[in-house]
Amino acid sequence: MAQFKIPVDLITSRFGDRFQSMRSTSMSSRFANLKPISEFLDIKRISKPADFSEVQSRVNYNLSYFSSNYFVVFLMLSIYGLLTNPVLLFVIVLVAGGMYGIGKLDGRDLDVGFLRASTSQLYTTLLIIAVPLGLWASPIAFALWLIGATGVTTLGHAAFMEKPIENAFSEEAV
Image (tube, rainbow, N blue to C red):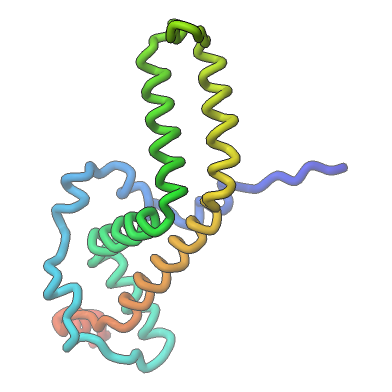
């Protein structure tokens, strides 16, 4: 059977350097250009776009202008999703706490009076407990919900929010 290879370079080259700037910025500078909520939720600037080219223009402008605000929306939806899925939150805390606890042993065996367990046994036990719980918590459904909710919220806001008047006139050809 022939192998199927995904041309990752072909896919990622279409994005150009759009995501490179996100990787190189720190968290503090990421939130430095956070727009005020009065500007982000300005009801006076919400209108129905006339055609698809106007939708594209608005989305291109608003995605870069409100990028930090959209990241906060993503974080808020993530927190909401984890709080409404307590099993997934428990699995994440369990795995993170287990990995931290096993890492604190520094390769030594865990000795609890009647029980002696090596680090490989502890990792295996954590895996045996976390995988079924993780499958039951449905992380794939959570990820798809998060992508969909963020996409609808972000693209909906970006498409219906008008550009500022000074930017609308700067794009017209004279």
